[in-house]
Amino acid sequence: MSSVAFVALGTGLAIATVIDLKTRRIPNELTATMVGVGLGLAATGTSGITVAASFTGFFLGLLLMMPGFMLGATGAGDVKLMGAVGAIVGPALVVSAFLFTAIAGGVLAVFVAVRRQRLTETLARTGQLVTGPGDAPQKIRAATGASRFAYGPAIAAGTVIATLVA
Image 1 (cartoon, rainbow, N blue to C red):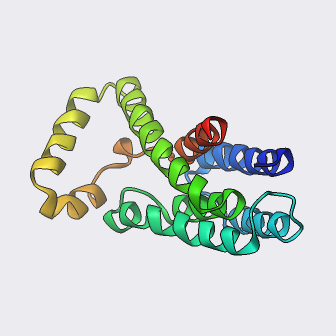
Image 2: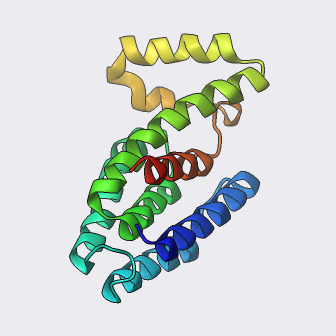
């Protein structure tokens, strides 16, 4: 990944993180801009990936996040942010970014649960989701706001780690 692409990616992720922490939303304008930047960098040969790889990374990023969205565990902005990441980094690196994001999300979930003094309840409910996965979507959607947290920071952390270890 070129330094220009890394700076563009880092800037977009930093902005997404700040906005998501404040509003629990990731704006479409931001993710669309990141996709445009990814495609533009690919078209000019600046990012080190082809335009086809940028498109593939975009769609793969969306696809990887879709199950979490369908279960109600992540928001549409999170899905689009991972797609934007894929447009900048390409398909191979977006898979790594997704995997590191899942780890970062788990660590963040534990941190948030401890901070909110809900670790025991969170672990018990997670156990219920694992043992009774058939009704997981209903349980996730029914969770109170106190159980939810901004996932943009996890996407940012996972993506940065993936780009640094690649």
